[in-house]
Length: 272
Image (tube, rainbow, N blue to C red; front, side, top):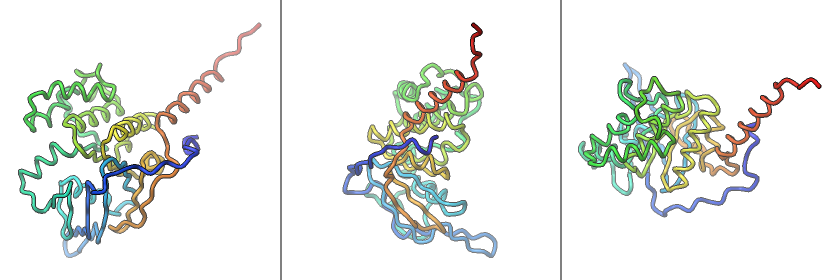
């Protein structure tokens, strides 16, 4: 089935820039909960280079979400240094951090985070409005067409399937043409086929040159990426290039063939 549909040949090493887009050194994040000290990150080091597609994996409580919040400039480390495109994030003021989040980073969440009473087009336009983009409607339409929802511009979230809602979320993330996409369990609420459709979009965006960092607990989803970083107890414990990568378009083709075969087997045999 899905786990057996892989490239037979090893993937060629990805050509990346010599300078990392993300450089994290000795990152600590400590929370005080009552009289207890919780170390979510405990001396983590990580480099991510332009054009990479990285899966962050680890058990519950390993620090995955905390790491993503720091990478996305939604939180700051207790100790350590984080350089984003060569600039120390700790040296940025609130205005610069807001600009980075709006223009340089695209966020995709498991729960979609769409506004219920607004259309797909309006949901995608919103961050462009904050960024004062004059061509925001054109950008939003282009982004929705890019994810295959050009015919759903006026649909509200309750009129869309889960997979379509996640496509709107991806369109919202890419509309400002960010250098980095951060996805937190983007397929966690989706069925198998919808998950593969979402991964196909991510693979295509990465093939176009976008850097993608994705948190997932699903091994099959991790195998769609080019690199898997395993973390445990707030530290990187393994960092590997994916040698036998799942290609979403091939998985979808197999799913379609299996579905057609099942339908054919259920069709009544004509009586002669």
